Image (cartoon, rainbow, N blue to C red; front, side, top):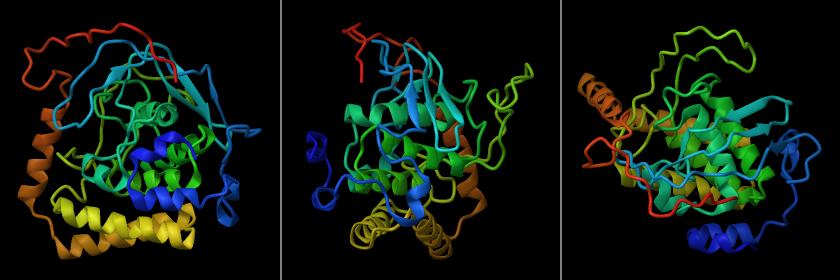
Length: 288
């Protein structure tokens, strides 16, 4: 078992150790699940990051810009692009749910996270591919990219569950420059997403963190014991969100506070900084 598993919580370690390394079975057969998949692949790898760090408000890790473009081909043959200059923190896990999932900072996650961040990551709102595909297919791509990158199935599904539950959701998409290269000059983002301090899903921003963590931990246990498919994980998360919304109804003030949080979170200014992004001491380009 690879060394990065030691950074995850004990239940996840034990569950991952039970995996055989084979691809997902049954309903998940349609997903690419190996680094040597004949369909899915990362193009122009390895991932290369610039040496400068960017600190965004309320995010647990520093971000780095991509030094070179990275591409990923999914099971349907669709191309996903993380262009040079977009920001990635190498995690893609909502801050509130890191306690359950662990701190996924291993290089094996970095390529999948960079592609995912290109389409919905904080700090990339003005990037060319941001919100150009639906939130569901973007999160599913993240799972598939993790598997192709070598992440064991149990770990990949746990990370997918966290992103599907607490990650960003948006109701409208922008023109997709891959599917339709005729892109208008207006790249204004039209989105229903309200970034919160602990989760990016606007439906959950008002719910206590310990409640979210308990619900996700229960789901992770079911993934380990029952071998849930991606579709089953989605159904379980959707049910949990419905139940939480009944238990913790929202109000107009909740929505307004979420909007303010999003507007404050758009800046790339370091926390408490002067507006100038200070480069890190090291200027090397790590390759993952």
